[in-house]
Image (cartoon, rainbow, N blue to C red):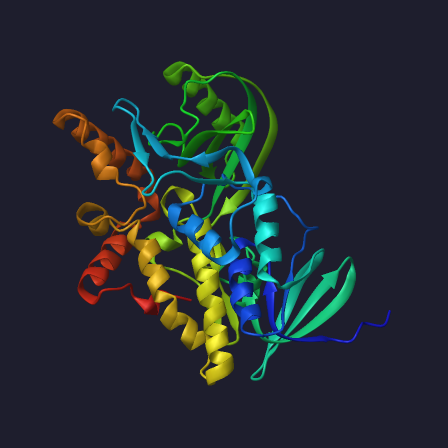
Length: 407
């Protein structure tokens, strides 16, 4: 079989994600020849709650225009987050600025990619890369046939289990903790949970990450658990609890899905941004806001990545150096959400937790705080405490997080 001639481009972006769309828009607007490759057929399914932050909503409108109805689930918006506890009162926390869109990721990602104006090639799987001084050779397969790209820069925007990260740092993914998250979709018989909110449980007996919300006439019940543990058993435990504690009655699960999550990188400032002419962005780089909302950080980090390449292209400075300088602002915004000093004395989130505590009595507030702390002890085995505290102090003294910890 004769291989086709290599395709020469300025930038090759791997993964047709929201971060890829944001990155590509900056590149295309600057006149750089850019191609996005995606291993699945587009539009492709994406495991995600679809609950977007106010900041992410603003970014989409400002960069891609008003959201069409087909990129939204029903309910089409989310007012905020409800926190539930084993015995403390539940509290509703509204987003600043009002409700935000409930994105249908299959359609919203595809819409954003098309609005960016970038050339897209789906059913194309990244295989490996070879980096040199003047560019990067990427080997891929398009519908089973080998394909080669020669790019001045490559961007990995291919999610938590990024193949680009694996190609640049083969040891990286084995060095970080991994969790599995899974969700099942149920017909609703009775569900008193307010459909305007994303519901989250600070309950150690339910798992590391437990949530539920309405989508398209069904109820999602999701749970995070350790790799190797039984998802069905963990999920059944949550469904039973929701019935006993909240009066939720659900029919048998009709669909099920799950994925791996590189949770923890934004807590301890262990982001991975690439090497040389290969740049990593979005959740592949480790961006994940509190409540596992990663879309806003993906959009903003993708845009910063694209802008850094444009600056490098027109001013001659190495793109990696430019990117690491500019991405520090997004690192601060994301890691601040997990920083205990910022949480205690600042307002790093896009909803006001402390204000939501206001209507509760002193005893009830104390119980909420105590049960959050009891839940956090689930993560003690990862021994992140010293790292989190060290980074919090570094942030306090230096105004930012330690860049020496980045890959």
